[in-house]
Image (tube, rainbow, N blue to C red; front, top):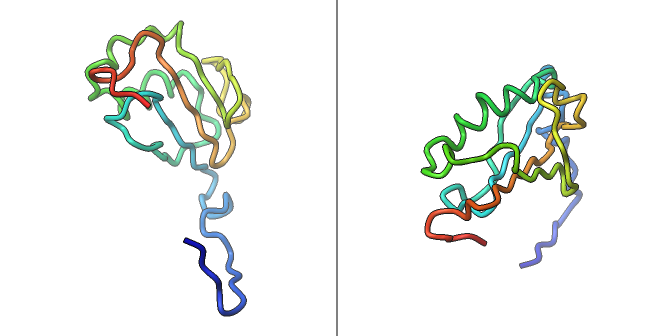
Length: 119
């Protein structure tokens, strides 16, 4: 449904990077796993090494899923903001080009969600 403003509708965005005091928003999505229906947003330091994403962040976000422990991280397919991406664990978010409001998607070949309830 379309809406029409009856006047000027200008306002400063509240999710500008300046409002996060040295941190940034990063979205995470595990494709084909509908137990998590939408990307999960976290506020993270841009200096965070990707190894912490793998070792702490993702297990805290998705560890409750029965298939999470079965992930073979060497076969995971990554996408950053719609483009294929190969992360280097020793590099920081900034060094990898993961910016404020970036979306990181990952696919786990062979793990297609509970009862293959994927999209």
